[in-house]
Image (tube, rainbow, N blue to C red; front, side, top):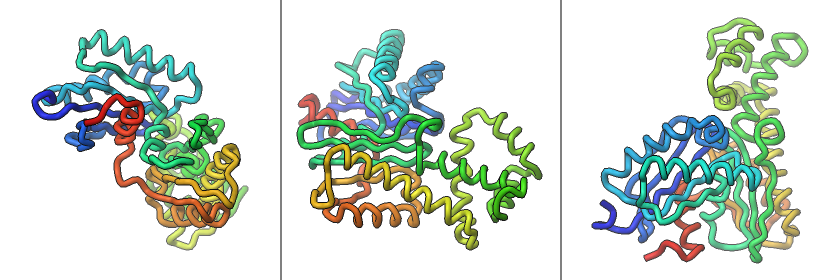
Length: 315
C-alpha cells in the first residue's frame, strides 16, 4: 500500500471522450497512470454512468495504493450547482463503496486542472479537445472565463466544432448548396454511405454524439493536405475562435498588449501544427509579452499543484 512507500493522491481528468487519471506521490512523482475511453463529464454524473468508471479506477489502483486525497477534474461544470451535484454523487459513491482512505475530495472543472499547471500569475489556460474552454486567473485570485458552456452555446475551435463544420460542409456539397469539397468523399468513405440521409441515420444511432461528431475532425487535415479550400477555411475558423477565447479572458482581466501573462495550451486539437502555430501567432501579435507553453505534465497533474496551493499535500 502507499503508506509503505510515499503518501499519494488520486487525480482524475475527465472529458467528453475519456478519463485520464494518475496516482501522484508527495514528491510529485507519477507512480501510476491510466486511461478509460468513456466520457467522464457532467452528463456522466447526471445519468450515473460515472459509477462503473470509478469502480474500474478504484479496482485498478487500490491493490497497491491508498490515496489520501481525491481531486476530480470534470468537464462541463459551468455553474456552482453543477459542481454541487457532482460533489454529492461522489460523496455518496465513496460512502457506498466503503472507500475510506481519502481524507478529503475536491471537484474542479477540467480546465482548472490545466490552470494549476502554471504557477506564475496572471495565468490563462486554453483547452481544445472534444470540447473547448478557457479560464484565467489574476494575481488577486480573480477568475475569468470564456466559453465552456457546452456544444450548444460554445465549444468553438474544438474537435466537435471542427467535426460539425466538416459534416455541414458535406451536406451542403451533396445538396448543391455549397462548394464542392474533398471532405465529402472522406466522410462517405469513412461511414460507407452514399447520401446525407444515411449520414443523419449514422448520427442518430451514435451512442456518444459529441464524440461521434468530433471523430470527423481529423478528416479536415486530409482535406487540407489535398489543397481543399473548404478544409482550410474550417481550420482558419478554428484558429480564429480559439484566439477569441484567449482574447476574451485577457480583456476581462484587463490585460493589454503591454502586459505579460502565461498561457498554456492543451488538448488534442493543439497537436495539429497548423492550428497550434496559427493560435500562437495570433496571440503573439495581440499580446507580444505573453509566454505561451505546452504542458510538460499530463493535465491530471494539476491536481497535485492544486493541493499544494491549498497547503494540503506536500513532502
